[in-house]
Length: 394
Image 1 (tube, rainbow, N blue to C red):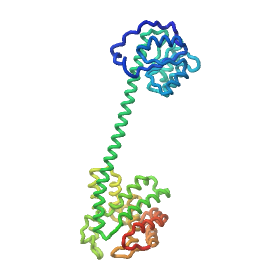
Image 2: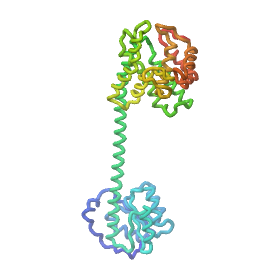
Image 3: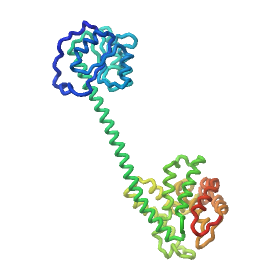
Image 4: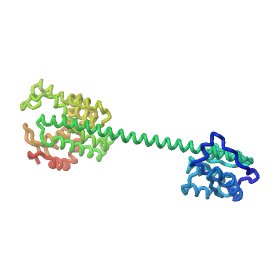
């Protein structure tokens, strides 16, 4: 407890000029903890004109005040109290309310205890008995100033964090809007390419839907879990329509030729993956972070690669071919086989599945082909629900 004889209760000194601006306003609430009611009464009369003082006669009562939501700039506690001592109390306050500045009053024989409290962070400073009124007032003023600095730093951090979060949210919104605007442009080009090709109706919509379900099926079966997540599934559904966008650069005389292409014409046709990739790359220049366009680039460039390396584009083999392009290849082939084209009748669902599964390890990724067979009933139902006006094969 405080040593009553250690204090003389004359009028307090004037505040130093550097602290004068702190004399008014909030943040001058002080909690004084001691088990001597008479001393607390005298401290109230000495300090009450300068500080908003609250008092507690033991550590448990002090903690209840703090836990009730009352806020204090400084807690001044005596070391020697029954039950919880001053260091223990200030240690708990440090854990629960770290902005509160903690000051300990200790006798000359307890300096080692106070030093340990300083070292462990439980207290900010200690006053050794006997100490004058001036020292107590100066210590509290210094504690209030430190509390305000700590609170200001916290507020600055919170404001910086809020500004950063707001900036991230705003940038994400701008990026999403830019992504949507770019995607709308690319979608229009993809539709133009589709209309110039032999493909008609809902081909792009069906292929996008098949790609989404194949990606989900792969993930659910535990395949390619290091690559497939919600973002991948969303992106492949949106980027699938871009696979043949390069056909906008192929002359009609080749693209729409009813008969077999010559070797020279075929060389021109084989350029459409590169044309498509370059088209998307040009659009990506304004928004290189767009994951949809990045995947669209991979799909456009690599959708004619073969699992065994015999395809064209870059001559990639196996898993060196981007996963999105491997999924697209299966989905696109299934749709091409099961829909009517000027040069063929539609295949049945069963025949198309059998063909793609046989092509596993040569033309198609065998895991993706097997997934198509496993979820075949779902794919067939989606195909029929998205069928063109021309009757598709059953």
